[in-house]
Length: 276
Image (cartoon, rainbow, N blue to C red):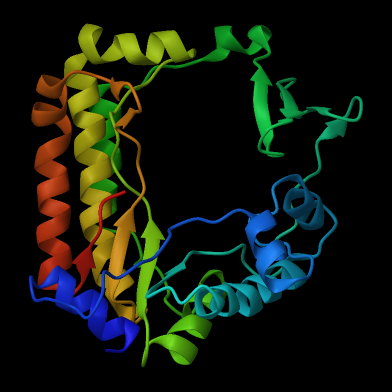
């Protein structure tokens, strides 16, 4: 069986010649160990610095070159694809305070993780907390009403350069999976603690946030199908190794109806859906 045939057989409850395999995210060090060269694919702070330096095209070329090569080198059946920074994208660099610490323009601190090498949020500038404005049901409803008039996304935008490259080069033999947005628990608040408390203190606002996010997910499916991929993978987190982030009851009431609607929309569009 070809890798593509193998995945479809498994998803359609037919017996493949072997268990199909794919990874949705592999760090740069694995690429470098297997391919024997430096890469900017998922290269953490090195990739961030490259974008700060205006090297967007170089980053995207590394993705287009190295993702297909690693997929073939490891004999994987599923090839993951993602949106990439648009042409001309050059984010404003953060202020460097020392070798591992940076500050954004709002005064929040970030540090390079000694474990993952990502530039990660470290400490919030508490002076900004007083400026936080909580969402309201009425405000979210206005955003929902505006969705109907919003222009659909352009599948030919440069953000989808990697997707088009992989679909053209690999779809005949491999199963192409697009990682995309998802609906997790719909929280809000100026701090991590307050955001989780909002699920219990302001459930009507959280339910409205879930509706807004869910409608956006369903709306994007038609556009995603035009990219030519075989499946979408919604990548929101609902839990950790120790359990759910919020109660099953909250998931069933606020999140599950939109996960169901999203999956049904994907199936109507001819896409498989592979939940992260």
